[in-house]
Amino acid sequence: MPSFPTFPQNCKSLLCKHLTPKIFELLKDKATANGFTLYDAIRSGVDNPDSGIGVYAGDLESYSLFAPLLDPIIEEYHGFGKIDSHKSDLDPNHLNAPNPDPNDEFILSTRIRVGRNIKDMPLGPAITKAQRDKIEADISSALSSLDGWLSGSYYSLQGMSEDVKAKLIEDHFLFKAGDRFLESAGLNRDWPTGRGIFHNDEKTFLVWINEEDQLRIISMQMGGDILEVFTRLTVAISQIEKSVSFAYSDHLGYITSCPTNLGTAMRASVHIKLPKLSKNMDKFQTICDKYHLQIRGIHGEHSESEGGVYDISNKRRLGVTEVRCVQDMYDGVTELISVEKGL
Ligand code: ADP
Ligand code: ILO
Image 1 (cartoon, rainbow, N blue to C red):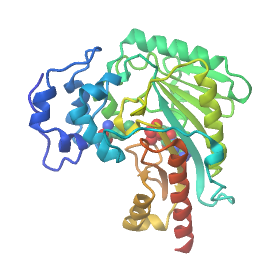
Image 2: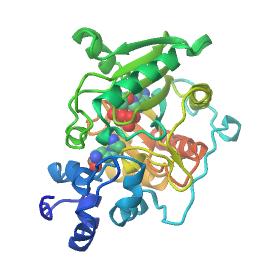
Image 3: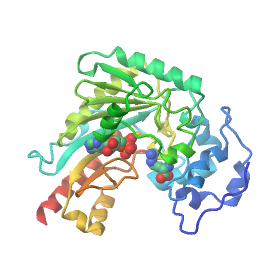
Image 4: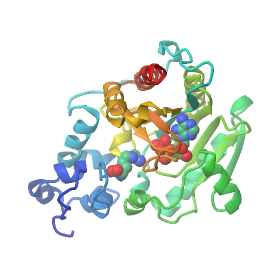
């Protein structure tokens, strides 16, 4: 095990904040049953001091074995304590979300995704190539048996032409290669084998296989009908759950490789045009903070905004239900639209 890492003075990651020499000494020689060590968990944040969080888990056991480091990070990110428990609610009837932009003036598109990982398998940072390939085969086969509007095809990344890949990424359907945070976490090993995307003809229901999580189940469409997008996602999840068992704990909800995704593993977002409000970033940020929202650029995390269009999504995922995640986004977006209109 390398020695206690040094971080630059301006480092703001939760890893840098919570990894004390005492915790490092306590955990440095521990490894999970899958051989995942403290250093494996923190490598991404050490290599990338501009990380917001900086840690990844290799398996469910990582969350208990490395709890002295991970619990305070989880608590600070989600406001969720060691003895709290997580509850799920995927019932669209509990969501109050009439389209906040019926004339399509502000919201370009809506996307809601959840991360899922296979029960009793290591997570991506600790998985072997054989295990990852098996997941690709099992999940793509389970997805190919879906019918009706859920039916679609699986496209493996390996066989995909560069043109098709570039178009899918440009159109916001496919993940990008080469993320340096995932690279250091060991999530890009054996790239591109074992990875791919399933989607229906309309590309309103998609599943990423073996990216940051083993499944990213996605519902998306143009415009602001958030309820329709959520409803489609809940139907898709329940159909997939008929043939696949996901990693879940009563305390942490759905288990994911990044602690920010624990719980619901849900990110509900809109791409929204806010050219006036975004000229006053302090005001924009204050409204987002009030509704627990995160601002991203339009090509995903760590990307920039273009033409006053932003990706606005729920920040909380653990200790709140799925309905609450979407409601946070909905309530905040409604206020953002109202403020933009008044400017
Ligand atoms: P994740 O959603 O899994 O956290 P990213 O932030 O990297 O991952 O986003 C993945 C892709 O989804 C990117 O191409 C991003 O632009 C696209 N995306 C996210 N939200 C929306 C949205 N509301 N409409 C269209 N595309 C979206
Ligand atoms: N490890 C990166 C990303 C954290 C949150 N995003 C996810 C789950 N993709 C960081 O610490 O900034």
